[in-house]
Length: 112
Image (cartoon, rainbow, N blue to C red; front, top):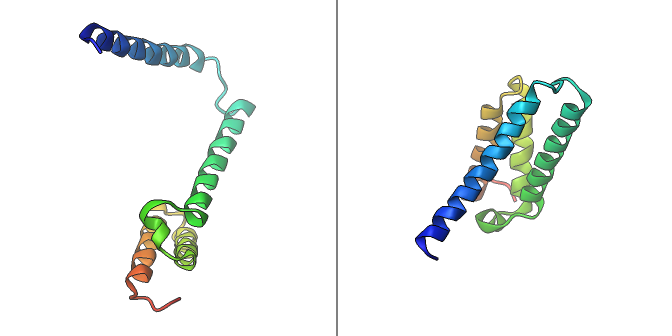
């Protein structure tokens, strides 16, 4: 690729990005944040997140694939329990789940 083609590619990418940002700014004043559209977008976002988490637990790739399914399920259950017991603290829930998975994988917690 020549230098001019590279710069043209960067310019087109920047213009495309800034076009959508400007459109968002222009339309944001006209949208109701408590409206049905935002509620739908929030529901879709939560559904995508739930699907990704379920896929990571049931069909993992990479290093997580080497851990037994029972370990991943137990760590997820511990994470959920700690999350709800600590008044919905995401940090403590995630930390408890990761810690449990590490201890199970290392054999410190004797289970399956």
